[in-house]
Image 1 (cartoon, rainbow, N blue to C red):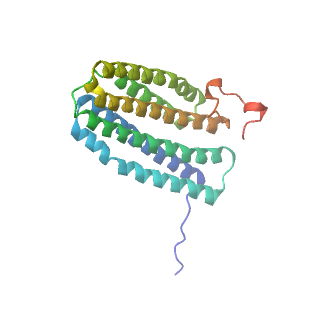
Image 2: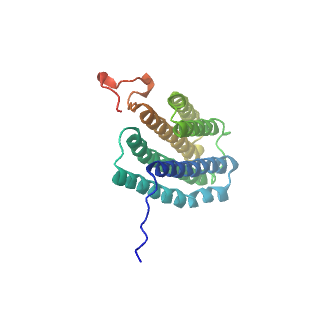
Image 3: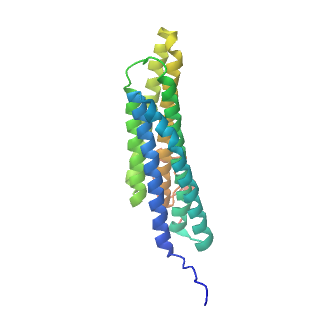
Length: 239
C-alpha cells in the first residue's frame, strides 16, 4: 500500500490562513493593552498579574506566524503583491509582538504605581491609550482590506499621541517639583506614557506596511508627505 501523500493547500488558502492567524495575534495584543490600562485605572493587582501571564500566548503566535511566512516564501516563491503581503506579515507580526511587550511593561509599571498614593487624576494617560487603541484598530482595518486611505489616517494620528505624551510629562514634572515624595510614582506614569507612545509607533508601522502592500511604495521615512505612485527620487513603485 502506497503511503498517503500530503497535499499542500492552495497558495491563496494559505495566505488567507496567514491573515487569520495574524488577526488572532492582533486581538491578543489589543486585549493585553486594554487589560493593562484597566489594571492601572482600577488599581487592580489581579488584573495586572493576568496581563503578565498572558505573554506566553502572544509569544507562541509570534513564532507560529513567522514559521508560516517562511514556509510560504520557501515553498511558493511568490512575487509582486503576494510577496509584499508575506514580507509585510513578518514585520506586522513583529510589531504586534512588541505591542504585547509594551502592554506587559505597562502592567509592571502599574503594579509599582499601585504601591503609592495616586499622584493625580488619570486623564491624559487613559486618553493616550484610547488614541493608541484607535490607531491599532485602524491599522488592522486597513490591513484587512488593504485600504491606503484608512492607513494614512492612522499615520496622521501619531502627532496627537506625541502631543499627549509631552503634556503628561510636563504635568508630572510639575508634580515632582512641587512634591518630591511623588517622584517614584510619577516616573512610573511617565514610563507608561512612553510605552503608549511606542505602541502608537508600532501601529504606525503596521499602517505603513499596509500602504506598501497596496501600492508598493515604502513610506517609512516620508509617511507624512503622502502616498504617490513613485518613490523618492522618482523611482517607480514596486510591482
